[in-house]
Image (cartoon, rainbow over all chains, first blue to last red; front, side):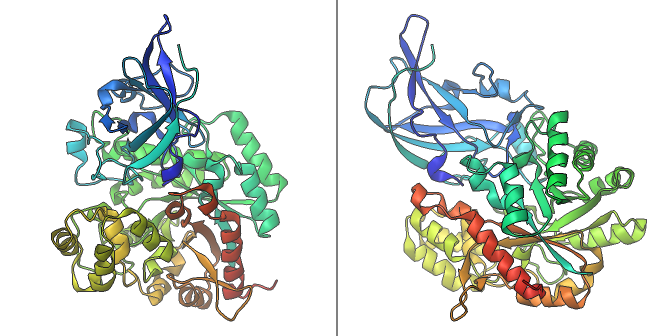
Length: 158
Length: 354
């Protein structure tokens, strides 16, 4: 769902530290569903930029006006809601950030939303699925990688 | 006694996503564009900060529905068993979740909640006292590929979403209703159970994304020859790297409805409200201004509903937008127009005068 619209246009920027050094990049995402979700269900993204994959351990997720959180932290946000209308910001660590110009980004969103009990439930508690191309497991309502061609914008979070 | 028309605001999910219509604009469209009063919602689509909306939101909602003289029919509620992440929610916790949704529905003036077909019957039984106390009925959805009459399908799946199927869901609900005598237990059939072919918008979407068109052709042509899991294996074997996800194979493979139209006759007294699922309303050839969804039978089940004296709402549930969101904005479908066409059909089939 919303394949071509999961990343907000004009949202790709570099992240900077207090000294103004680029330490990564960020982009704004929407939920690939027709409803919001408990924040605890946000299970990370498969992210591929210009052919390089950036795993979930390099990602943090910013939502609800709070500082970016890791997916381990989000797991405990069992009463907080990602509202359907809102964008979240995915931050990705990358020394030096992205070079100016256009970048090809592929993403697959993993949200552990379900419609009730399924045979794999206990397994998901022990080993949550890792979002990866070719597997819809844990992909919520996105089944395939969505591709974007985005221009790096000026500015970003310090 | 009559069939009444309503809309699940699910139908306007795309307009809401893009900030084109907030819930107030959606409610106004139902009143002013469709001339009717029935409103159904998805709790986590519409309620900001679910499950803890502000008092202001509740009052604003009730006030707005009163202003336009609307009727809050059904609130659709969910069961995310992984909410707590450190364990799978047990049945008692699932019941607490549903009870909270019942209280929230009552606060917003809804008469019913629609729970998912996968909610265990034990969980629903635990919630009957809360439903009675708050005067909110619990309707279990009958959603494709679930049958109304168990015994008509024996194809047990282990892959994809179909793996969760308990074919006895309808019988369990009817047994619970009869055993407890509680009118607070019922059913919410979805017209998707009368879908007899894949929608053209789904086929086109899958074609745009798969790596092998022959695999799509094969499934469309040969699906009737295989059982669910068998077909997936055969497609994998014949077309390695086809790139069609399991749930999409299921969609392509649909070649007969999971319920016969006449199956609905026996459950009419237990229907809470109905989901008017559709994917693509197109003009009927030779009949300008009249519309149909070419893959779902509406005429026959509606005939039985009228004959059986069904007194309740059919709420439009447009679902064709998701298969048209993979390209530019110029390809996005107009949900408002689609729902208006659906209501042309409902009015016509239900014999409602213009």
